[in-house]
Each structure stands twice: as structure tokens, then as C-alpha cells.
Length: 58
Image 1 (tube, one colour):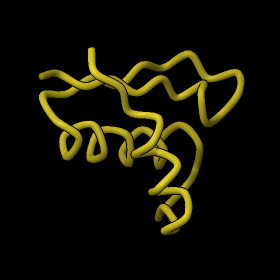
Image 2 (tube, helix red, strand yellow):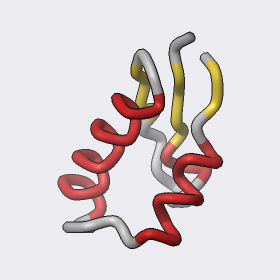
Image 3 (spheres, rainbow, N blue to C red):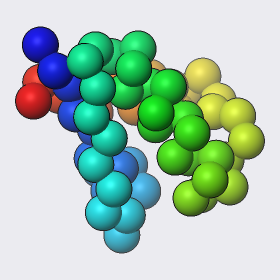
Image 4 (spheres, rainbow, N blue to C red):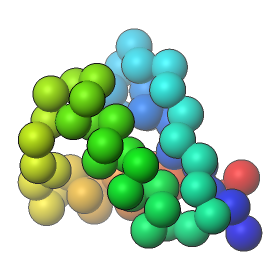
């Protein structure tokens, strides 16, 4: 089942929605978005857990 992550759930004010076929794809796309849009070069382990918890079924 496709997955979706609303960046605004983690970064208030960001309206980007990341979609993918699975959690792995959403995490990859989300990491790229975090780098380019928010200047986050690497995502710390505690943030990874928050991101994974925010990924929902589409």
C-alpha cells in the first residue's frame, strides 16, 4: 500500500507532502527534501523514529 508523509506534521509551516510505494521510498524522498528545503544534512536517529511514526497509509 502506498505511503504518505506530510512534512508539516514534523516541520510546522511546510506544506510538502512526500508519497511513495513504501516506507523506504518515503524515507528516501523525505531525507532529500529535508536536505534541500530545510538544510538538514543527516537525520538524527530520534528524528528518524518521529518521521517513521508520521508516515501513514495513503
